Amino acid sequence: MISSIYFKGYASLTKMQKIEWNNRGMSTAHAIFITIMSVYLVFLSGLFCDQLDGPVTFRSSHLSNFTLGVSVGYFIADLAMIFWFYPSLGGMEYVFHHMLSLVCAVYAMLSGEGQLYTYMVLISETTTPGINLRWFLDVAGRKDSKAYLINGIAMFVTWLVARIILFIYLFYHIFMNYDQVKQMDTFACLLISVAPTILFIMNVMWFSKILRGLKKTLAKRHVD
Image (cartoon, rainbow, N blue to C red; front, side, top):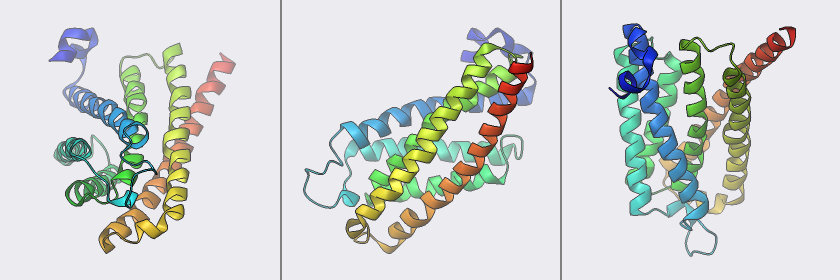
């Protein structure tokens, strides 16, 4: 409804393009919300600061639980759409990514364990608006525009910071605080060991595609 009012080209899209447009609008809204909340909870709220007593792996709050609940709702809704329109909205890699993220978010919300690391991973959602904007520009026929080029560069930078460098810091933090990590439930320890590793591998694979795409775009611009 919002898109039909504010975007002139929305009415000319095919039925499937409208569904994907709406899906990406929802994911962008969630990404903006969860990025802001994750950055606040991890770096600004003081919930996970070193000055507090007790293991950092067991800290949670009403706000942190509520925020995870919003993400759980999003992952369920998005998974339902992916399954309903499969494979138009994404293949098995998206299903696997969402299922893994959903399990981690649900466990952290219900148990209160490992929320720091869950939110550090969720900061990676900061790359989602850029990815969706790239699709919007492509559908709108703006692939040769300056905005498309700037978007590609921004995607490269945000992906490098939020999905590569931040994950390396995450692994470092887990290693340095392993005495607190091992106090958690066995399933939580398994999630913290396996989930970020799998997601990091996927991030690196997707990052290589982004890099190749950016090189291709820059090469085309240079020729033009």
